[in-house]
Length: 357
Ligand code: PMP
Image (cartoon, rainbow, N blue to C red; front, side, top):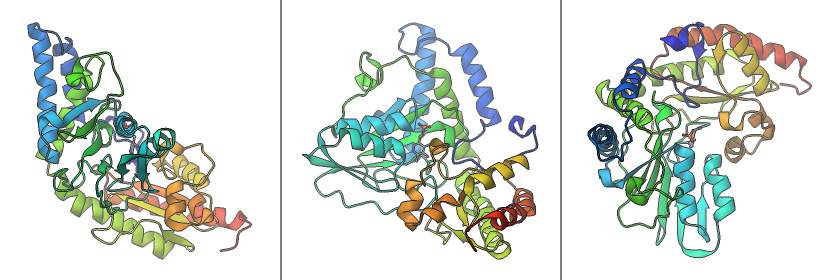
């Protein structure tokens, strides 16, 4: 794989995934064959249009929606902003674990009018834990399914969702492509206006090449039996790492509930008492092991993660946390490599810390 040229152990799949080889191929092909504007009435335009509609159908089928209820966007951030802004001036309730693209947008747009919007993600990106969806009563319900897509089967109708967010780059597709499910008949206000695309719901020339990559990535989820692989193989890697960390590293604790049915199978968030998360990350990086502290979007932000604060209420635990997130390319050898160096790194940091174990 091209991303493995440097023999790194990549454990940051929740931040973004390497492009799948078949996605790279599909996007190259699309660049050559499907360059025409998908809204144009000529033949090459129709070919681009058909490619896009194919992706819409595959995504709709995968999540239990009608294709007409899927709108392509530039990613999960845009999808989230679109839903929240639709409810400008209305009551907006979010879970405390939401991504910043929900929390910040809600802070800007929320008011006091009814009906109310509830926005609750089904699985959190920093710790992987599943959340309970609220009873939407007389309001509307949105869920950011960015981390769920491709990992576990999901059905927007069975979940009673009115809106749902997806992103291509968490499943081996390209960055800059996402989608929004908008249930037929619910309120909707386009964020990007000035074009007829997406039935006037999202203006802007279609990103045909990007959508072709999204389409191929979705096909891979379907054809390669990803759901089973995440549930068995990836879960086994995650759980093994969790058990070894607890056993082999003094002062370690888990922020992810790894009990079956309580979290995504590919995310493990752990804290190491008296060792700073960013220092651990940098030492691991120097060993070719790529992890993150909480959410990559918040990297460089020295405030403790709002997610870990909401879950643990302890700034020290939050500051000493590392997120390991697995993908289908990882192996048990990767877990062994982490455990060859992590105990020593944590021990060194704990020895120079002023906080006792
Ligand atoms: N929501 C969640 C839960 C995420 O994990 C991410 C990516 N970190 C986003 C939204 C933003 O996604 P995008 O990069 O597609 O805008």
